[in-house]
Each structure stands twice: as C-alpha cells, then as structure tokens.
Length: 166
Image (tube, rainbow, N blue to C red; front, side, top):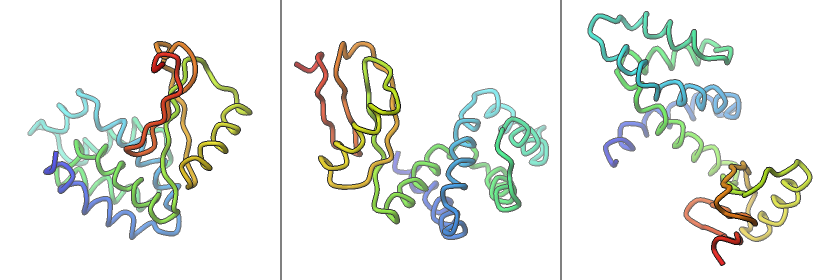
C-alpha cells in the first residue's frame, strides 16, 4: 500500500494547491471520479492498448454526473495520460485529508442500527464534536447487526456504544 500512497500523493497535493480557493467543489467531483474509476469494466477499457486517451476520457466524463470545469477536465486528462485512473480513490482520500487538515476538521462515520433523521444526526454531531474536540464531517452508514446504539469512527479512534459491543 505504500506504493499506492506514494503515487497518489503528488496528484492530491498538486490538485489541492491548484484548488485551494474552492476545495469543497473539487472534493465533490473528485469523490465521484474515485467511485467511477474503480469500476472493473472501466479499468479493463482504460488498460486496453486499443483505447486512446481521448476515448477513455470520453467514457469517464460521460459517466460522471458532475459538470466538469476546465481544471477538472485537465486533471482527469492528465491522470488518464499517465495511466493513474486506478489510483483515484487514494488521491481522493489524500485530498480529503489535506482539506480536513486545513480546516481543522475530521471525517466521522456513524454506524447505526437504524436510520437517523436530521435532528438526531445534528444532535449526535454536536455531542461527538465535544467528545472528539474538533469539527466533524459526519456521515451515516446503516449496520443492522449493531442491534441498537451507534458506533463512531473518527480517523483511528472508535467510540462504540452499540448493543452488540456490550
């Protein structure tokens, strides 16, 4: 995995420097690109010697729902030209880490046995921000096997208040 991180880091850092003013907009299309780039059929097509860079770019941009500005188009074309499409999930993760470091926040995933409404999520986020002493970007994933309660993962820290853990 060190090689993956080593290859992805320059792309994430360059993109971060180029988009420092609007990093959240970049994060939205970069996350989408990361999801698109892991598709096995796309990887197979991109690795084919018969496929040109323009054809691969046309497929990628055609699949993405985000409207790509000129900087995004140039970035994607550079990634495709250097055969680095498979590294986009790691680039997105490193870019997100740079954005979080700049804003002083962290990503938090709340695993819940049941769906959480907006009010409960806002309340939980407030409590968790006090508990972890930093601003959190909260997302929720359902895990019915928890039976009840929540499990929170912030970086390498875990807070497990689920019934399953007891």
